Image 1: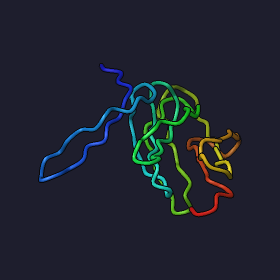
Image 2: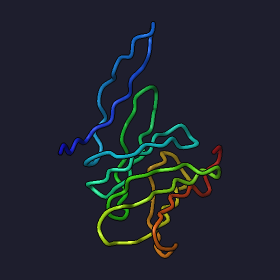
Image 3: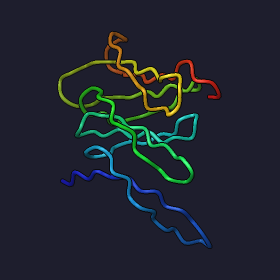
Image 4: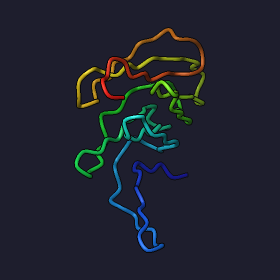
Length: 130
């Protein structure tokens, strides 16, 4: 099996899809979702992390990885802006909340524990404009 570590945007022009420069992320990106702020979230299943990809001035940049449970494989954006992470690896059945910091750049995430058993929630809190 292949453990790739990048994601890539493809754009369409005149009915032709063209790949853009790959963005390096954690090992084996397995799922993507979009944040309410237009960012992209990726679950890196072999590095047990989630990353936010932000766009500033037309340039996509991977933010530092956020450690989550074993084998994150699914992401979902809820209507309140939170990002839900499902972990399918190993024997750990954890759930964690990662609230977003209240000042740009939106890369200040902290980890809280004790939310339940099999799902992790990344929540944006106190951010104006979302």
